[in-house]
Amino acid sequence: MSLRFIRATEMRELRAMSRIHLLVLQTVVAVVAIGLWHVLSTDAYFGVAVLPPFFFSTPGDVAARVVRLFAGGTIWRHLWVTLSESILAFAIGERTVVEAKAGIFVPPESMNSA
Image: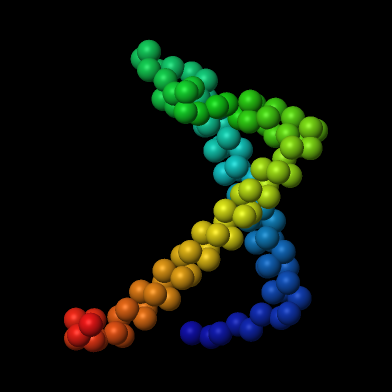
């Protein structure tokens, strides 16, 4: 069994092809997912909606709403609230992890002595 060494130029070509292949696959997955979302949110099968309209909107309605939010300038308020909530969630989660780790190393006898 012989090992074949790959030259740097061949490696770059392989990476470029794999990146293109990956981009195509990602695009296909996105198109299929949005297509399924549209079909399952607009059609009823055997008289039952697979994705009930009360809970799930169609992709077209979501896109129209995003365009309206950007056009009206109100998207920035929503993005700021989302960012603030994310930062707060990370801070709470980090504190919980630190407290849990600290609690593991506190002997139970010391807690009962007070």
